[in-house]
Image (cartoon, rainbow, N blue to C red; front, side):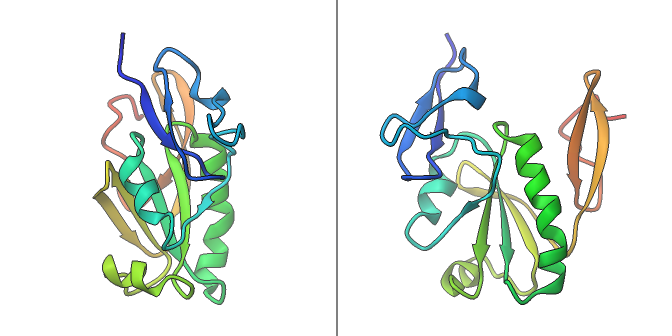
Amino acid sequence: MSEPIHVVCPHCNAVNRIPSDRPAAEAVCGKCKQRLFTGEPVALTGQNFNKHIERHDIPVVVDFWAPWCGPCRAMAPIFDRAAKELEPRVRFAKVNVDEEPSIAAHYGIRGIPTLIVFDHGEVAKEHAGLVRTSARFCGGRRVFVLVCGDLPRNCRHVK
């Protein structure tokens, strides 16, 4: 039997184990009983940032943004759509750099919007500026991807 997947609840920040043989999209938190995947980005703060970044066994894509930023507002619907379509394979989260300047400073955010992909607490990829979307086919299935420059290379089936 495979190892369970660890996921942090977007509501109460409890770490949950999801058995690998069960559908993650239907999982509920053992503590607060709410859905672990809502299809919406999670707002991260100084209190919950490290737990969400370090304890997830799935990649976490974080949008560093500000409400006054025009490109951030333009990218928000793209990011929201990605959360709806790609969860539970990926967790999407947002950090308001005006409210959490210490987190932005720690990761050297100099321009917004900036996306950082975290994998087990480590920065896996970073992209500053707007992103576009693209529909691709992976293993015969249509998938939605955020395109940050190059197409994703982790999928051998992208055509």
